[in-house]
Image 1 (cartoon, rainbow, N blue to C red):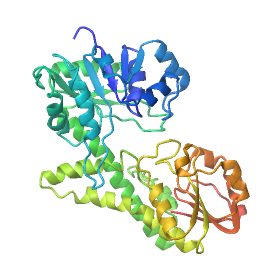
Image 2 (image 1 turned 90 degrees about the horizontal axis):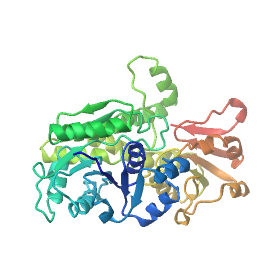
Image 3 (image 1 turned 60 degrees about the vertical axis):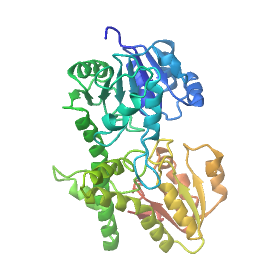
Image 4 (image 1 turned 45 degrees about the vertical axis):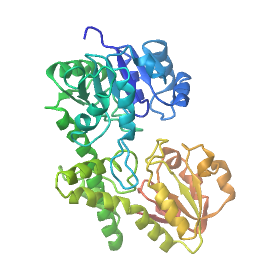
Length: 418
């Protein structure tokens, strides 16, 4: 492969930073099926807030080209797929987006091409699911013979401006040593971190899916501890502060666990586990605990507040300081509160669409609430807490789910947190 012509397919949280980062060293074509997404990016607008406008504009003037026409990436010989891997309503893996991107690539696949996947899957999926889809090409090309597979699990943490894609360690794997060498060369241009070559693709896939499953299990344990502390009338945050003084204590925080990674990936691992005849008790127990947190919190809020309370709900994205609503557990909590006949008003500085009936922050002052739920502690709320306190009735309660507020005794506010 004398010249690396790279296409990045899927320009979301993972694909866009990848395409931008690689464009410093290679000519990159970014592909996305959404014309609206492409149009916005060409204007320098990234709704995920991962890439700043000036940087995106600069890349577009140099080595980065964007399109929603797959024929424009037919000149490429390396295809990096970064599409989402969601779950179905029955919580089974949904390979629809992955099969779709494979179908797109298969139409333009040539002999000697390399197809790399960054999407989180269960061990074996790249060769068991993706390879057969790619082999449905016009030239009857075969995986591992005519074209080759690679895998490099994504490690993008939405909203994290410290562990960015240009600093983190990267795991890579390929069907043979030549592919490994090519991928190591490509990704070493992307990051100042180390490039770790996994023994094979299945190992690399497993390494990724257990990263998120491990976090899910650890957070579930802390959520369970939070319930115990609540019964003991002590703060789980005070307990964690004391425990963290031990050198090998793992730091995790309680709260709502949603999103398109931690709230989804354990189901990929458990699905594969069941197919192997292994009962994934620990994995599914952690998921069950975290899935039940919205109901647990709703019961507490309902118990503390009076009947048919007026509640201000702050933060509906899946985590702080990101605009992503996918699999946000805030919606489960909101639904439970509404089922208890409370009137719930929603606000989130990152959500602008009318679908969710977000009230304007400046107009909130005309209301007086029985309860304020800070579900997602965006910096926006932390910086405006003095103003937010004024939205509360004299006998109202603030429910600080993640315990991020620094209130002192002078505030004389009814306060609850996990």
